[in-house]
Amino acid sequence: MEQRTYNQFCATARTLDLVGERWTMLLIRELLTGPKRYGDLQASLRGLGTGLLAARLKHLEREGLARKVVLPPPARVPAYALTEAGEELGPAVLALAQWGLKWAMDERRAGETFHADWAVLGMRACFVPDAAAGLRAVYEFHVGEDVLHARVDDGTLETVHGPAQRPDATITITEDELAAVTSRRQTLSGAITAGTATVTGDREALRRLPDLFRLPPQSRRVEG
Amino acid sequence: MEQRTYNQFCATARTLDLVGERWTMLLIRELLTGPKRYGDLQASLRGLGTGLLAARLKHLEREGLARKVVLPPPARVPAYALTEAGEELGPAVLALAQWGLKWAMDERRAGETFHADWAVLGMRACFVPDAAAGLRAVYEFHVGEDVLHARVDDGTLETVHGPAQRPDATITITEDELAAVTSRRQTLSGAITAGTATVTGDREALRRLPDLFRLPPQSRRVEG
DNA sequence: CGGCATCCATTTTGATACTG
DNA sequence: CAGTATCAAAATGGATGCCG
Image: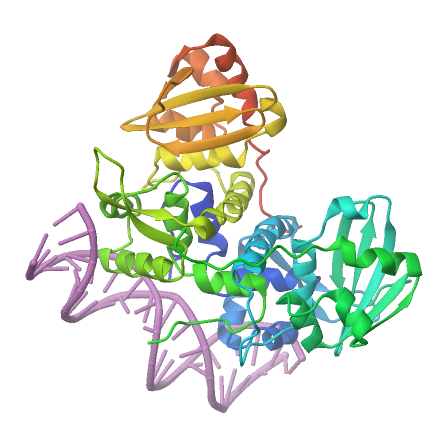
C-alpha cells in the first residue's frame, strides 16, 4: 500500500502529503502541548480508532515528525513527542487556530468534546507579545482534572501540559466556563469577577493576565 | 448525507472540519492567486476528478469561503473567487508552504506537476518585508505559458496571476529553472548570470529583487 | 497499558462516460 | 466548457481479540 500523494512540486502540497490526512494535524496539535501517551491520545481524539492511531503514529515516526520517547523518572513510561520538524509545524497549526477563532468558533455544539489543552493552544493563538513586554511570570491553570501552565517571558509565551514548578499565579476555572470564554460568551475578567473562576498568587501577574490574550472579533462567513 | 466532523470544540478542529478534506486546501491555494475558472482548476489539480471538484466548490460556497463570480469585461466568463473568509486562510496556507520549503522541498520528483502560480505562493512565503523597505515596484514574471506579477510596496507584497498594467521590470524564466531555484539547486541571481533567466526593465528594481525573497535553509527530517 | 491484526459496514476518492 | 451520473477502488470507523 503505497502512500497517496498529490504529485505536485509545491511546498504546500508536499506538506499536505505529509500531514494532510485525516487526524494527522490533530495529532500534532496534541503533541504541541507536550509528550503524550498512546492511551491519552486515544482518549483525546474520540472517533479515531486504535488501528488508525497506530498507523498515523507510525507514519509520523517514519517521516521524522514524531518519535517515541520514555518520560523522565519517576514516570518512565513510553510516550510520543514531536521532533524538531514536528515542532516547527506549530505556526501552521496556530494559523489554522487563529482563523478558526475568528471565523468558526460560535457556540459550543452538542456532543463536542473539549480539553483544556486545546484552549491552551488557543491562548498561544491569541497571545499579544507587546502586552507581555517586560513581564516574566508563570501561570498555572486548573481546568477540571487537567493542569497546565503558561510561562511568559518578555514577549514570549510557552504553554505546556502539566503543572509548573513554581507558579506565580494560579487560575482555576471549569471546562464549561473556559469554553464560554473561547466562544466569547464570557471574558476571563468577567469569569473572575463573577466568581466562576478563582485566582490566587501575585497580584501584578494576575492584573496583566487579561491583556496578554486578545481574541479576534468574531466574524460570520458570508458572500464577500 | 451529513458532513463528517471531528466534533471537537477547538478552533483548529473546527477549521479542519471546513477545509481539512482532501484537495480543499489546494483549491484555496489556487484561488489565493486570483479567480480561476472551473476548467483551469481541473487542469491545475491532476488527480482531482470533475465530480469531486464540483462537490468541493459547492462546499466552499455553502460555507462562505468561495463564491462564483463573473470575470470583468471583456472576459465575462464564470469563475470562482475567495470570499473575505477564504482570503484570510492565506496565512495558514503560507505557514504550510513555509514549513514545506524548509522541510519537504528536495529535488523535483518524476511525475510531479508544477505551475508558476505555486512558485508565486512560494515567493509570498519567503518574502522579507525589511528588504523591501522604501521600495515600490511591480515585477512581471513570464514562466512558460504563464504570466503573473508581484507588486512590492514598502514592505508589502501582493502576488497575482496574470499580467501587470505597467511593470517596472520583467523576468523570463523556464519552469524547470524556476523549479531548480525552489529546490535550491540554483539561485535566482545564478540563473540570471547563467542566462537561463532573462530580465529587462528598471535596473534598481532588478538589483533589489534577489534580496526580497529568502529561502529558508533546507533541513532533513530525522529523529530529533 | 500499548499496540498490532482482523473483520466488516460506510464514506471518500478517483476515473470516465455523458449531457446541456 | 461546466458540470452530473456512475462505478470501482481506497480510506475510515468501530468492534474485538490477542499478545507482551
